[in-house]
Length: 316
Image 1 (cartoon, rainbow, N blue to C red):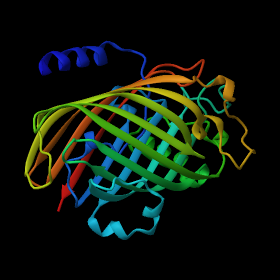
Image 2 (image 1 turned 90 degrees about the vertical axis):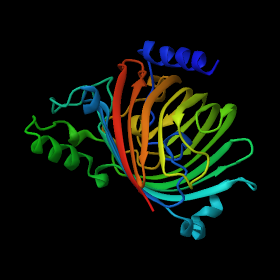
Image 3 (image 1 turned 45 degrees about the vertical axis):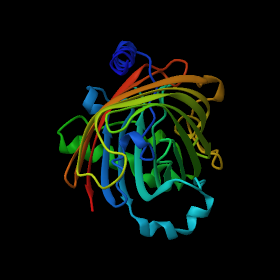
């Protein structure tokens, strides 16, 4: 039964060409090895999928440790009263471009140039009896030239001896990011250490992203339910349907209206889908991951998109 469900799920993922991107998600239990002490580096890039547009790069440095339980920001986060809790902080930098970076002029009906940087505080609570997981996160940061998206992409292209990107002079201007994320994972099928199938619901609200979503996720392989084991290897996948209300990387920030070019609310697709499939490995204290995400068009005249990512972590 478990194998049949998994085969159907993977076939559904691989058969889809319209999917939605959700940037670095470090609160998901799928990307966690249940370690209470960890430092981890995430790197997303559409280079892994031989593309160079829309969500083009994401960098995230994450630190998880029980000492962060005393972080004063935690009073804003929703936590389960009876679950084992993992506390973390991360620094994130994301970069977005239109379908071409070979034009100095604005490309109308296309994704604006934009970049943001933020500090995220998060907590993940797991009910060991049911396997259900509740996660919440609060982010503060900024979008605009102060995030140095132009400088980051230009440096990478120069290092790789590629053509330098044009058009960054029209990027979304500086604005404040305050955003809240909440997710709940409900376990449906649980074979401890070998197979999980769960439903997931998420909410994002704030000045960066406003959306709600629901979907299914699985993991299959060898993993563990608590943090005292030493090795793991599993494949994971997730499909979610999103209802989108606002995205600062497309619509511009909330407080600064001086942007030269943004997309109007009427140009945003209100419903999108995300499919992600990946591999997670833990060898003693080293954690490794590779994944691919498949993306639906986020705005009316946009294109489907895909990108990949890796992560490497050290568990104390």
